[in-house]
Length: 212
Image 1 (cartoon, helix red, strand yellow):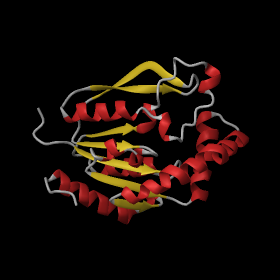
Image 2 (image 1 turned 180 degrees about the horizontal axis):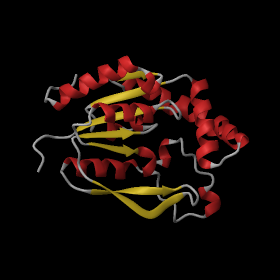
Image 3 (image 1 turned 90 degrees about the vertical axis):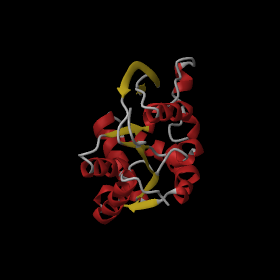
């Protein structure tokens, strides 16, 4: 049984903002502690009970696309020192696959996702809330490169999705959630000063000091 409650850090921000870079920077700074990363986009809702044509209309940038109840449940189980099975989402079938990834409790738990600061139940569990704030032009370029190189998509499809769903969702849900952050990091993991300040704060929490 763990002696101390794990430190829970939420890393939010728009698509392509640099959340993953910040998360990796935190992991690199705390190599002496065990760190677990939980990505919100593993927790898209299961859609196996609806027809494929309806699944294809899913807006993955909308809060209703996520099964946050399951995510909250899993985090609470980790806090109770229990192992949980993280779901895996199959983007080709637009639903969950049968595969799961076992997750064990760790000293530091990082929850990463575009809408984690839009969900009160998740925020209640966080010791530190971070928002990665990056200009829209950089975010769309990063998303464009990622989706073309890693997901085999066309330029037109990425741009159309950005205009129709990504940008509206960012303005309506993601950008307003920034006000709940304890720490705002401009430009992601390249901001060494902000990462240093964040690391110092995490160290204090690990040492048992209360967060503000």
